[in-house]
Length: 265
Image (tube, rainbow, N blue to C red):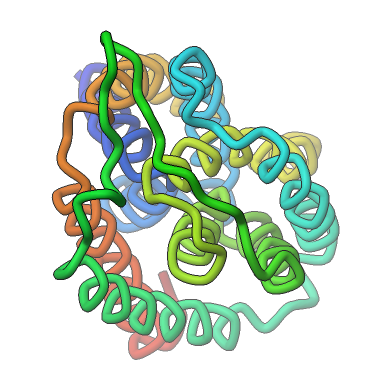
């Protein structure tokens, strides 16, 4: 019964993660900690496996559709992987409450900004199809230094919170780097697997990945991610925007409640 519930949970997390480019870890970490009674460090390590699975499943679909900006992804991933590896080793020395507070503030700010912009998305910003092929409108990534700095922070938070870094990289690419939302989500899905792997290796060596929990989650996440990646071109941009905002608000609310409760989650 527990395994079936975990497969279902993984399917839902993988579906949302693939559609929004944030990996699914933002849902799994708090759910595993709050509703399954798993210690937070083990919940983080286990959710990183789901993030890797999301990336592997969805990236194959996005790469076939040519919606992933590989050059941008590899550039930003250098900073992200560095941040993830360093913070995974130094996790015991960070004041996580301060980091969670800053992260919650960033998510709230990004949610409001995306909602304001999302309310006036232009038709030319949405991807089109031509003979079944996804056609991305022309764009040129901007503000690479900002993107690299944000990616370094995203990698650090991935190692600390088990989220894969997607909740930072997607809004940064979309809002500040002039990258279309579909490309931002596809590129984020491409990157989060490497980011999560850099942290997961450290967590695994410490024994903080529960294989009996991670295995059924990975099955569900893989199936959900494949479906989400295939549905992505058929879902209107505004709905992806609202879904992304809803997940970021959920995560921000969880972190705020966690901080108000004294960081006992």
